[in-house]
Amino acid sequence: TGPDTVSPTDQPTGADQARMAQSGSYLTNAQGTRLYDTDHSLKAGPRGPVLLQDHHLREKIMHFDHERIPERVVHARGAGAHGVFRSYGTAANVTKAAFLAEDVETPVFVRFSTVLGSRGSSDTVRDTRGFATKFYTSEGVFDLVGNNIPVFFIQDAIKFPDVVHAAKPHPDREIPQAQSAHDTFWDFVTLHTEATHHTLWNMSDRGIPRSFRTMEGFGVHTFRLVDAAGGTTLVKFHWKPKLGVHSLVWEEAQLVNGMDPDFHRRDLADAIEAGAYPEWEFGIQTFPDTPDQTFEGIDLLDPTNIVPEELAPVQPIGLLTLNRNPSNFFAETEQVAFHPGHLVPGIDITDDPLLAGRLFSYLDTQITRLAGPNFAQIPINRPQAPVNDMLRDGFHQTAVHRGVAPYRPNSLDGGCPFTAGADTGAYIETPVRVPEATKVREAPASFDDHFSQPRRFWLSMSPVEREHIIGAYSFELGKCYEPAIRERALQVLANIDPELCAGVAAGLGLPAPEPTVPLADVEPSPALSQVGHTWPTD
Ligand code: HEM
Image (cartoon, rainbow, N blue to C red):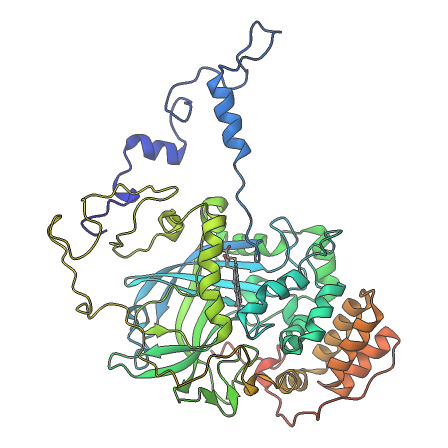
């Protein structure tokens, strides 16, 4: 830590250490006073009334009453693990990020999650999975807050409350708890057809992964890398599991769901405990940072788009190994706070409007979830780099700051002068040119094509994967009560592919409509199929 900040880690005394380990040779109350009995309330006689003056009783129950914190508004159910990231150095020509230089090892914490279910819901439901990684780099924390699906439902964060309200359980009966088979979800995704691509991935085998260890991960948005000379490159981030990409089939997922709702978190913890450390290769697809920020006609600022790997191969830049289970779920997995704006020099954002909203949302929600602004001091969130931030006070402040002048420069505390712009190792936002523009509340025309990328995905599937997708749509839509929503869903499918639409229509016992848009002339991308997946390469 810097000279003005005493971090909590600097000061545990013997008593604090004993409290953390809960290993003392005698029992105390929270004030350190020794207890002779923790099983009986203080009473006026063995059969008499309990006395209000029993501080131990009140303290013990008060603390218990406040043990729960609010669960995350999305991604509430998760499982985490510690590990290490070793960089190959192959990205050093496009980014100055110190942790991406050759052979640098960086500690990490990863949290996998489902999106919709509550903390106590099941693991093997059909849903998107979160794949969030905290890199504790020497230059500060970098968080890559991604999913196992490379595209998102919406293109503008202003719709996020709407899509989540539509996908969460119905407000009257709180049904369904954790799955997508309900009217509001299908109502939303068929009225907001930019959701078509993400929904198709959900209905594919990707929606029911076999294990967290066999999932890909994606940063989704396009990011901007900056090299030492200030040159920039646009990138998409990928995690490629060394075990390959594998899913359950629907019947398996249903059975496992009933027999072991903790299947994925158990699998992760057991594998790590057994020394079968899961590994992912970190990779980037790179694109020239052109003024229009498109690649081969694909708008890189539209998070409903992928760039096929055949057009821009994923280049491996490092290896992630998860090798240690958390020792306390609450302290680590529950209290970890990721944020897409936690960036380090050499990694910058782009103008994707979905990413812009995320940059506000995560900090905002964490103030409530973690009760105040000091959650960066919680052990799992602490940077493993010096902190000298001039932030003061607030709920749950645990640092004992020194000095009288929490501003820079000052002439009172001495030392640590600060001259704006002088620190060459500092994070500097890339000076990207903002085109002359008129203030508008609208989307660009390049965000309007909602069907050609889903069509590419469908055309890339093997026969068995197509069968599974038709089965998934038929099952889920079969549970929609509102006929108009089922019919609108078929119209969306007709705009992707006639075979897909006909299969689902037959499953629902409805006629298949004709497409209302010309079917896109797109090439399949074999890398999208789990059967055709060519990673790992060695
Ligand atoms: C949580 C991914 C879009 C708001 C999460 C988590 C992941 C994630 C992985 C769980 C983090 C953890 O394990 O603690 C994504 C991806 C998105 C996306 C990949 C799109 C590309 C959005 C948008 C918003 C949003 C557009 C809001 C405008 C939230 C909130 C949480 C969350 C509020 C809970 C955070 C917390 O309580 O700590 N997201 N998300 N997300 N996300 Fe997103």
